[in-house]
Image 1 (cartoon, each protein chain N blue to C red):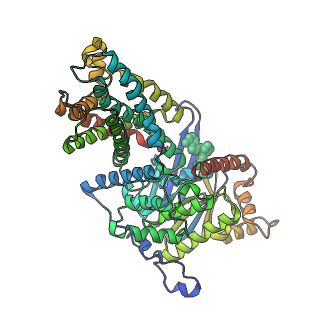
Image 2 (tube, chains in turn purple, cyan):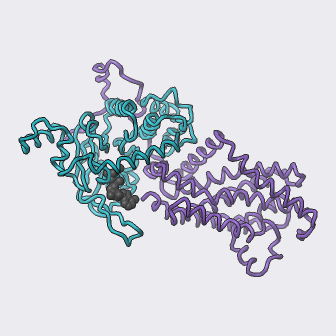
Image 3 (cartoon, each protein chain N blue to C red):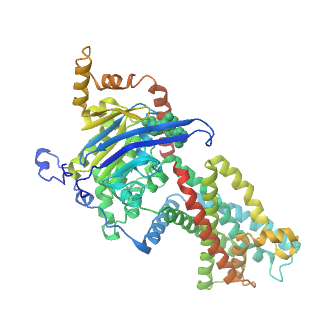
Length: 287
Length: 285
Ligand SMILES: Nc1ncnc2c1ncn2[C@@H]1O[C@H](COP(=O)(O)OP(=O)(O)O)[C@@H](O)[C@H]1O
Ligand SMILES: [Mg+2]
């Protein structure tokens, strides 16, 4: 059997226009193996997400509208009402971390729609035919959602600062805030991708996303302390990763008493489970 | 056999069925026992009307669908057991236009350089060469959303080429394009193949393209390969078997081997397919 003809530079003599230099396209890149594969893929996905944000910032601005309204209207009003006991913290300060977490969750919970869109358009299909394990692809997408959420959270933080919320300026604590935002978004985007892998269509995912965002939001400590809730809602809140995210953000940003080790532990565990579930179901989207 | 001597693609009794309506509905035998071998370095055309099973075959070869019945190998690597190895050898352009409209052409190609582990030091140069190979150097820093259908196809070609694949898989690369854009796509494919010697597996339902650009073709209909050979061999068989047709076109060849015209009942499918491609194109563009 004849071997594949290698590059034939001699052929350029027959063709008057040898065309552009293609030398590099003859050598396959050396495969990355081992533990460096996943971080490399995650980096690639995050880079793409940032590039997209750089090209089109409108999403960033439009997504800032809702948290702004929450802080301005809900926050200012309830600060005056003093209806919610926050242990001495001004209500607006108490609310700000909750709104940061909420706005990140609202974005992440619809991330699966993008996955379905990418499936329909062939973008995802093509990525599935690259040497990228499903789990690495999902992790990459999850952290890309996280990176996007951090940029968005920064907008809300600035907004809150403008409204006079007293927040930390300690870089280490702010780094912790970024990590909490990334983990929370990673989890909720995995939840969304998992649902996408089950329902497979955009409309159904939209419906489910809309149905679960409000319960997740109100069934958390984002707006009010857990102690105020009826017992059953407290149980919901305790199973809700959003509560742990808010607790961490509040502790780091405002300095309220919090359980950072538990919070980050739960968020990391939830993200891990989310990645496992979503990557198990990702193949269904390709069929 | 070394990898060099292996056929680029080998399918044995490949079959794939879809279940309509959540496993309760009728079973569609999309691919129904396909045997074929693509030789290294050739342009192999999988030709058939819409619904023939071309895309399904391609999706099994590209590891997107699990091989449930039969065997598929790419350069001797099993498409199930050695999925990752197979993926490293493949450049794949799916049927729907699949460039990311929210990125520039260059960023679209760079993503694929990254996921194929092109080292950072070499990335920019390699991406530039891939873009040059498809004649998109000038448009490289424009958003892919502003590209025409033909340009998107060439961009996808660059995405597939940047990893130096041994086997380039193109699923209906010219569907929904005007004749000039079609010619442009083929011209780039041929130039790249001349320069790199890579194997090309292409599906199409345009007879004239298969006749002009493929070294060998397989005629596919209703999930089966009806005939396989060079266009000339197939025509010669028709001439020998059907005295009434002494100057057969590939359309005649298809009718001879499958018992029906390529275009008759393909029309409806073709329209919906074109519509689908257009929809994607407008979403991209
Ligand atoms: N995801 C799917 N679910 C159910 N049926 C499918 C699916 N994909 C393809 N089919 C069916 O399989 C057959 C072959 O389709 P396909 O491989 O796309 O053909 P071609 O690419 O030659 O037009 C068709 O009858 C088509 O309707
Ligand atoms: Mg097809």
